[in-house]
Amino acid sequence: MDAAQRKIVFVGAGNLATNLALALQDARYHIVQVYSRTEASARLLAERLKSAYTTDVAHICTDADLYIYALTDEALPTVINNMPRINGIHVHTAGSMPMHIFDGKQANYGVVYPFQTFSKNKRVDFTHVPIFVEANNAQTLDLLTNTVRVIAKNVYFANSEDRKFLHLSGVFANNFTNYLYTVAADLLAERGLPFEVLQPLIREGVGKLDSLSPIEAQTGPAVRGDHSVVSEHLRLLADHPAWAQLYQTLSEAIEQQHKV
Image (cartoon, rainbow, N blue to C red; front, side, top):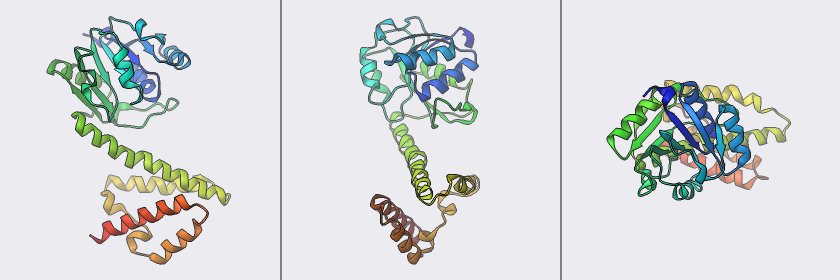
């Protein structure tokens, strides 16, 4: 079936749904409907896609080829349980939820997990985004693989247990580091300094990972065992005990790793 003839329904209208729906539409897939529990979210994405929308699973389009559930882990089971049994392929996009959450609910199902961080107002180029797929039968897996290869070069198979570890690694690599950027920004703001002064340092640190392993790229006082600098930093964090604890825990872990 030609891409333009494939009809897709998005169940969800958040960050991932927005980026993936727009990318698939650019690849000539027909996004026929958007579902969200929140009318404003459903309408906003539907208007961008020029598609229909609904806030009631009872009114979900029943003749689509693919149903993509891009929901929070908390919402996903409830929506799947309330969804009528519909022909077509049903996939979720969650890193930490098993594929078999669809067991007994739909006949053909799987997972499409783009391994990236998404925001509604910043388009992601899927060309180099790793996408991990899984399905309950070979025919469905083949169709999902071919579908996502239209927008992404790097498509891999990963079962539900592997995907949990992918998600965990992403929390360390992205979510935790972004929180550390937030702490750094707040520390600078307290001294009237702009976050922009850190951006060249951040870019260089990330850029080194193109040629070095993370452990090879590690620098700083903890690697050097410079306890006097670590102690001074902890003194400066006296008014922020939670940040001080975080600093100490990370410094001890880094120092221990580089002693091995």
